[in-house]
Image (cartoon, rainbow over all chains, first blue to last red; front, side):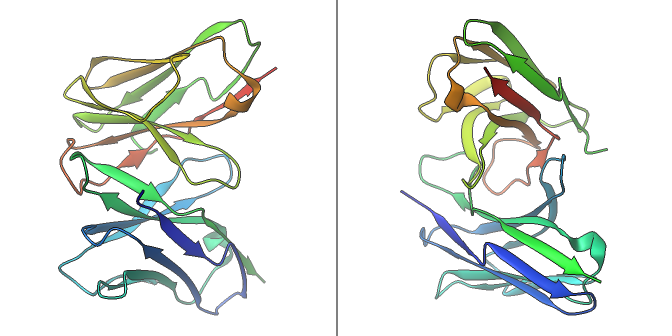
Length: 114
Length: 114
């Protein structure tokens, strides 16, 4: 079935450095790729998403890039801050069978150290 | 405040108990979802409702029974659960069940089966 692979599973950076999380997807028909941030004791929060008609999208310190040919997409966080520490999940939509279904990666634990 | 409220936040139950999880969304959305989140595994979609009609049952055991009385409320009725059902159960909503609609999550119910 359709799946999404996410790397790395853990990432530790110094405050102010950049962090990059990468995902690959298997369904070439996927056209919507959201990213979620999950803090301890909370549910996943949508932080940015990208659709297949664009290659890059930015929102302040967060950017997402998409390479449809290679079926890769990445999350870039610049000037990291301690409050960026959380688990980040990528996802891709599943078009088989219709409806609004997402398949998720296994998550990246990001730790921003002072 | 995510606009999606789940109660209770924590639940401990025995394998022979019957309990229900509740989800309410205040976003004016028409599609609602139940997900299961277990450690080290991707989020697993369980059920999808669109305009109160169930449109997806992802091969979920019958000991989980969903109910959607209106577009704002979603329940998950639990009975005769197994220890492996211990997990974080997340509710989400989207504008409708159309492809590529952003999904917004609640903070989940942490379920422990004794």
